[in-house]
Image (cartoon, helix red, strand yellow):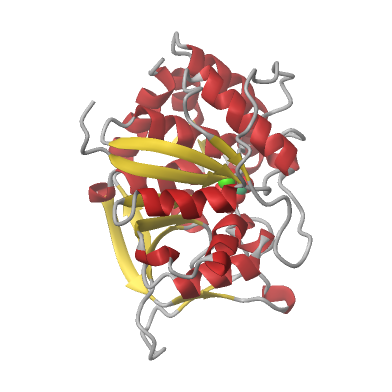
Length: 311
Ligand code: BDR
Ligand code: CA
């Protein structure tokens, strides 16, 4: 294995689409996953940690440290996404718990430590609410100086949300955390919900990928079955996997078309958690978000298919 691999730290709340994104990261030879820092979001922390550990086990990656992080948003409680991902976040298939437990170190401490160990090279990909990353910034405001690239799955850049009419789940779950992160990083990459909607997979294709004769595919087929059915009833012939699109953008940015704009998040009232994009450049502050507009769909699908069949 080449020593030039990019160190990749994934902050995540697994979650069915988080799981697919993590498998894609495991499958990529140019990146070395150095840890999973876990946050509450799709479901409670107890489940998101258990799911991360189980996924590593199924993928044969028990070597990857899993760190438990924040169990709730910074300020205000928020609804989870158990209706989409299952009460346990992994489709309630009743899997046997992983043999391994999470590390003793808190996820927020791990983010800071790993940013020092991989200073200037670290790729940080945030697939859940930004609570852990925000708290890391509060503990150590110099964090952005050591992160080579931050990729965030979150927001809905034209305010076409998925948890409220206007807000996307991750930014709605912890808007204060999103605000802290968006203001602290001079630049970051954003894969939002609306890009996700433009890059769905045909259900028939997902069924075929999940039918691969591989342990990962069998497990993924089982945990994603309910959410795929849920989505099929509501959103038609395509299934949308937000975190896997963000991961494709993270792993292979050359497949992306982007635009840079100033992005912020609303904290109050009915617009709480809504991302606001200065599309016209009227805000005097510099652009902070490199927003994913389009991604090479064929390359994206090939990556997903390969990740499921990898083991
Ligand atoms: C995001 O919310 C979660 O339900 C998914 O895992 C993804 O991170 C999509 O809005
Ligand atoms: Ca997620």
